[in-house]
Amino acid sequence: MSKIPATEIRAGDLIEWDKRVWRVLKAYHVHVGGRGGAFMQVEMKDIESGTKKHERIRTDDRIEQAVVESRDMQYLYSEHDNYVFMDRESYEQLALPADFLEGQAGYLVPNANVQVSFYNERPIGIRLPSSVVLTVVDTEPNLRSATATGSFKPARTDTGITVMVPQFVMDGEKIRVNTDTGEYVERA
Image 1 (tube, rainbow, N blue to C red):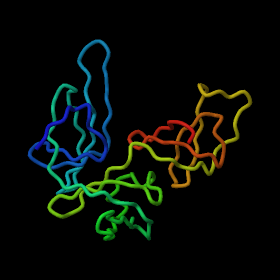
Image 2 (cartoon, rainbow, N blue to C red):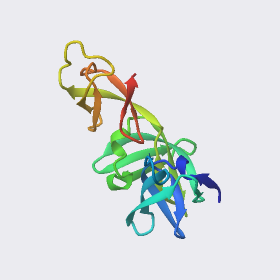
Image 3 (tube, one colour):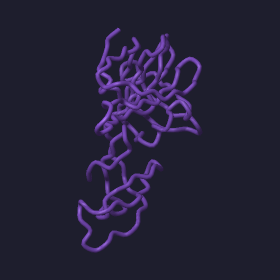
Image 4 (cartoon, rainbow, N blue to C red):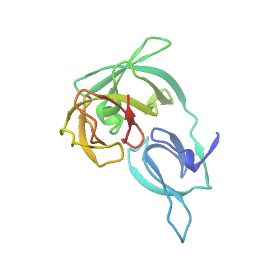
């Protein structure tokens, strides 16, 4: 197994913690000014039992990455409550239930390349690209003289998620969204 710095933990990673394999759902860096040091706040789910856990990990700690097989797959389409992926080498299709994606479904766009992790030949996690391009389908009209550094407004995207965007973003525009944080990055 390989060890990685705690600061490199990302959503979708598989780590070994307390002698179990966990899938990271959310991870963000927290720095407390003055007293105490910085740490990573990590929300993770046990791949065997399905229990969730929140953990604070010091930034100078090194974490064991679980040994898993990752396969490059392409997202094809959703059908009922399943999301269908195709293995890019063997062309085999794999349907994963919506609850398996743990909130990542809003970042799936047709033909997106993702990595699906397998542990003992069973799918246990999905890793999205660091950002995706989504189309804004509904947002409030912009304000006159709104600038890039102004306030933000909610915008619903074609995948159904809501992203806070600058005032100048209009319906029909394509935006780049960070898949780790769900935040607006730029116009695409």
